[in-house]
Image (cartoon, rainbow, N blue to C red):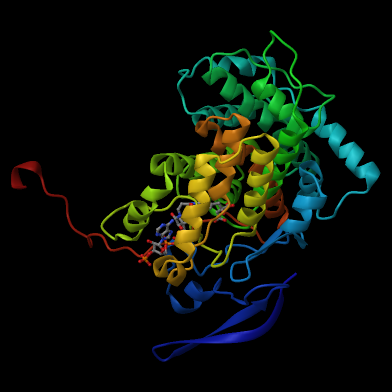
Length: 431
Ligand code: SDX
């Protein structure tokens, strides 16, 4: 809980407005401007919300200067090496690490919700085969509202929990179905005897014509990728889910909105764009050309996988991902992967360049993830769907927190209007 410690004074003309300051557990204090418009008939203005805290939360903390990321207080590095994705899901949803009985029960509930309603298979056939899997996921996840009516009452805590379990359980199935549909292969049903990441890999890569054994190295790497993407404070897609949820929309519609937002190349779509950029660069000798383009104000090109609104130091997830990339490629016998070589050299050159140093641009979570996913056999179009299925637990945990917040109300920002002042209609002959 935040504490009200001090007061800020805002002087506007001859008016002095007292604004409460709340102090957090970690991070900067906040000035509460909730009553500002009523007291001073003035709005604040912060496009992109660079200096705005939109809510009070207990789930994830990021220190951008230190390059620190905590899920419910636990450092991401420790969770990535000691925990596993479903345990992180429990932690994000319920606030504490589960004991053995709680973990067994949670795992059983998720496992037994992995299948989707058989009729949902028909939705896929309405899409072109070459549809981007994110388009399919937005549509099919939104359509879950039409099937799971017994978990759409946002005011019922039990239904909120069932919806959370269903979304965590079914997103990998839906993502795998979107992939299978795009390559013209039959859907593969989930297998309850497999753990969460292994189940996803099998649904993506198994075919009815032969047995499929999950490679434990890839399953462990996938589990780590899922943990690293699970939540990230009030990023664009999480804020989208919260805003959609603030109107009382059902959880499936809210998560579909989050998937749509994540798709953008400035956000979750960067992992696909980054690998495509690394492939376009192709060889180390072409890196300077792209560094120059990234620095050129007249060129819209940006180094994908670089920079972050919050991290002005290394993204801790990128560090773990980089270690994982080395490990997976080595274990898979992929030596001297040209894309990984380009990525490492690009990182080295950029981090020595004044432009990137002065603007505090470091590799982010998307810089290395694509290299691992590519080595696993995923097409680039599946990178953001994997980000989406991993982030679903974060979205739904943040959504649950918002719904349960007694202070929450519908999100409705105002604006700085710079359009035409009042004017009268002009009939066509007089225009
Ligand atoms: C994710 O918010 C989250 O937490 C997101 C995320 C999550 O887990 O949810 O971490 C996931 O979205 C990671 C980010 C993935 N996106 C990319 O890798 C795309 C490339 N990055 C940029 O588009 C950019 O860095 C953003 C969008 C990530 C952040 O943009 P900001 O905070 O709005 O910063 P900015 O655009 O104002 O950039 C500041 C300066 C600008 O130069 P000036 O106008 O000050 O001269 O840095 C420059 C930018 O031009 N800059 C870059 C750059 N990123 C910023 N220049 C070249 N290449 C880049 N990648």
